[in-house]
Length: 233
Image 1 (spheres, rainbow, N blue to C red):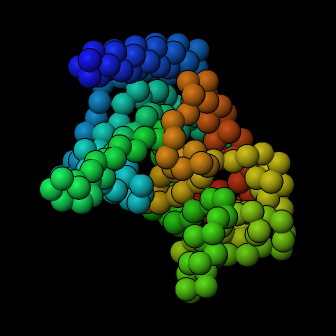
Image 2: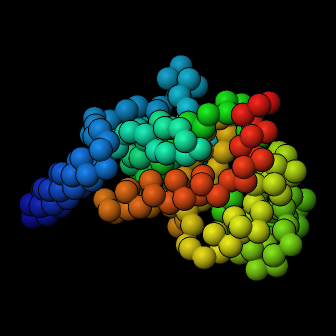
Image 3: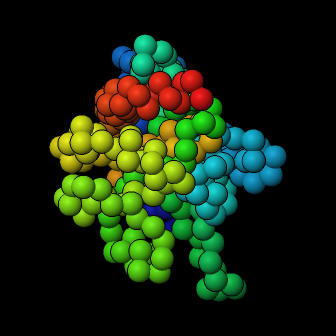
């Protein structure tokens, strides 16, 4: 009986994965982008250290790290076309020993875009404020506050360059971020990473296209002088 149940669950998972692949292939075609379902291994060693995912903490967690369902193409920003990938990502965390040994699988979708400024753009992270951030602030980890009390209450912003953070997140950008339910944003080593605001979860297929549109809108609101300074640095 147990074998029949396990087999049925496995079949349903396989069908769901196949349906997701088909839906994402259609999304890619509609967006004029490429689709590649083949898994890519982001597990440790040389491959991990050389991948653009490595600088971001979420891609350094656990083991059995891999991405699948890659929708790849170009997004428009500042009269340029920037290479971007939207994909699903999975990693596992094993805890305990012996009979208490447990492995849990985490999944999330992400958008990764190569910025045209190389390493000149400072590290920055913008995410929704939660209790863990408040505890970290008490412990001395800086959260950058802004003139908008509502924005500072709703968002946790950290950066290696506070001046860059203040220049980028100007009143126009604050209004944009407050007006929608934005994903998490991280910039590191010349890449922009966009992930679900709720943390480890998968976007629905239609959300892949929505993430591309949101990212273009976000980049369109970078102040011109910030883009100019980064371009000429």
